[in-house]
Every structure is written in C-alpha cells, then in structure tokens.
Length: 208
Image (cartoon, helix red, strand yellow):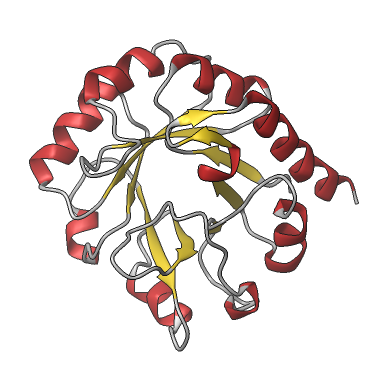
C-alpha cells in the first residue's frame, strides 16, 4: 500500500499546486487564529478551487466553536476535519464531515486507549508533545512508542522532513504522513524543492 501524504499549513495557491504536482494526496488549512499559518475561510476557498480532482482538503482546528467548524468547512469546501486540541469524541462526532484526531505523544501515554476512545475517527494523527503548543513545532517524538498493533489508520507527524521521512515510514508503518515545517522556507511558505525531496523520500521507501 502506498503511504499517503498531506502537506499542511498551506497559505498560497502555488504551494498547494506544487504539493499536488509532486504527489501529495491532501493539503491542510490551519483555521486556528493563533497560528502563523492561519488562513481565512475565503483564502482557503480560493486555493481549494484551484486544485485538481481527488485531492482531499483538510481543515485543522484547535478547540474551536462548532459554528467556526461549520462555517469554515462550507466556505472552504473541506472534505475532512482535523482536531488538534482537547476535543472530546462527542464534540468531534457532531459534524457531518469525517474527522481525524491528533494526539500529542508523550512518555507514559496509552495510545491504544486513545484509539478506543476515538474509534469513530477516520484515523489518529500522532504529533510531538510540546508544552503550550498544539502542534507544528517541527520536533520528532520517539517512534518506538507507537504500538505495532495500532487499530486505527495512523497518520505520522511531528518533525518529519526529507532526510528522515523514509526512516519514519520504515519504523512506524503509518497509513499516511503529515508534513508542514519540514518543507518550509518560513512558517506558511513552502519550498518546492523540499516538497519534491520529501515526496521522493516517501517513494524511495515504498520502492524497497
């Protein structure tokens, strides 16, 4: 099975198109206003309308109001929701769109328990725990903490970049990988060469 790729923190049309042209399956828009990668629903809509078919458009949230999720998902034409805060299963389940739940991995965390708790999620995204930050830190966590028998489709995130993505895939065997800072020039601005190198790292691992 090929490993799927989401390029997150998209703020420009050219970055979204570069990601897709190099093989990304999904792009992510950050709808958390405190993020340097935040985009408005209309900005996201303008970018999403330029995408070719069969590309997933994901909205990323941190403890949002339900009304904000509904407004942004309709305007931007989202296909999937991604929750990065302390959202309960009940909160996540209330929306028409499917969702993935992000978990910030830290020592002593029972990932299998969270897999059971968020059993209605389309998948669980594992990111690095950093105090006071919901994600996007560019830091790697200890991949050996991921159970080999993880029940949900697993999306690996946290500090991935062109030089380590192949090793990450070989060790964790995720359904998908999620990258943002690892392919950036600066926050919110992607580097087409880094995107290309990242996608090549994923492909090289698949070819083994």
